[in-house]
Image (cartoon, rainbow, N blue to C red; front, side, top):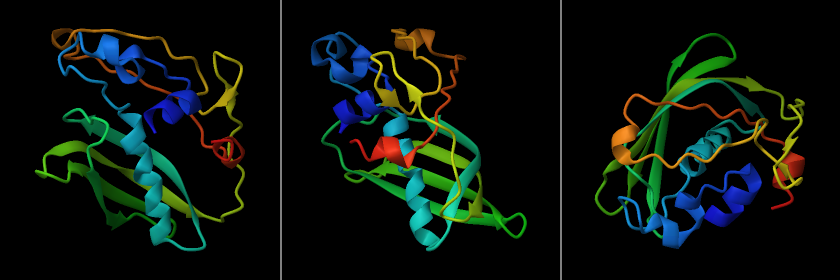
Length: 165
């Protein structure tokens, strides 16, 4: 799944896809892209049959790494209805074996018609269509260098792109 996600997003950071390089860092094994489990937030759409969700805001905190072959659980709840079509939510991803919290997220979404058009997907570095709308630059920071840093990735979901995988 990690390899498919790397291809889909265009994010081929060696820490995620190269076991030899990952062994040199703190966790000694490849770390799943943080956006991979976070992307499962789209499962909230299952709670609203006949509607599509458009995320207006999404704030996430990555609390601990997620590794391959580790079962995780997503718990989410709507916390407020802001108007007729806009809702606030909170979500938490936890490791199934011990319940450790891995990711926390909150945000807002609006309900829409399932046929709404969405932004076009971009071409990745290899020319293939991917979800990122801007290129990704690989950063190999040591854990001590991460404090206070943040980055943003712009992406869009296109059902035509997703159907290729």
